[in-house]
Image (cartoon, rainbow, N blue to C red; front, side):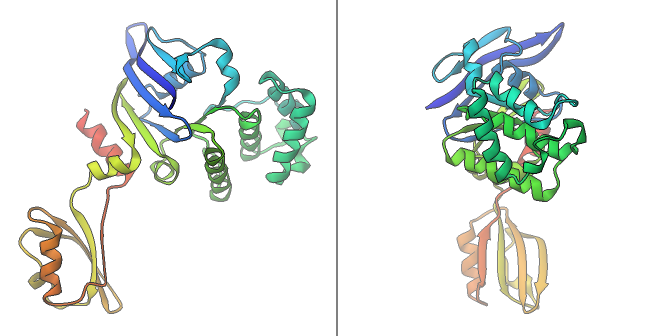
Length: 303
């Protein structure tokens, strides 16, 4: 089931078209990467889902029905540009934000105590927000975003400003939320994060969606017949290879030769058969393109 669907949504500001008939489908229980260069229209789409602004054309469906005002209670949004009331105590701020999402004061305190203990930040309960580092403040906002256990979570550059240790902590929590049934829209420029946690993606460029689908299926679609083959070290490597093969890279590792090859014609079975006539194959695997390479290639082809 699709928890969220946008159907041909468009938005303009004066004469500038920010989104042009963008349609995406987000399945329930997945992590959906919303990707694109700066100015592509991602933030505008996120603001529409949160009902901060409305499309000029098209419609947005949430749980199969047109998005309604009270659906906002079922959505959690962590924007890239964070903001907390600096003079308030951390606990007062967190409880206030939880109550805005419909939690009682008692339930908010109970859930906050659980998350503060889990993140080992109990000592911050009575500190003022202005005493917190940027990373600490972002942890608080992450907690307040997920505290009311929304059906849909939207994270816009959630790892921005975190050191690798805390970024990994947050990544694991996002995966745990997915495993417990939450659906997550994840907007980022970090393609490594996309590789690690996203099930599906949509790529927007110059106001239009130019790519959408399952991450593994997209990587299969963009593969270029590149393989890594490890054999015992050989003096005359070229004798093992046909004219259809190009060596992209080769590294001698102790007594092994690690080759990255591209096959321009023919097939990998022929390549392996020819190598086995002369030596053993210690390891063999196909190299799929990274999401970073796919991102760059697709954007360039759309210029």
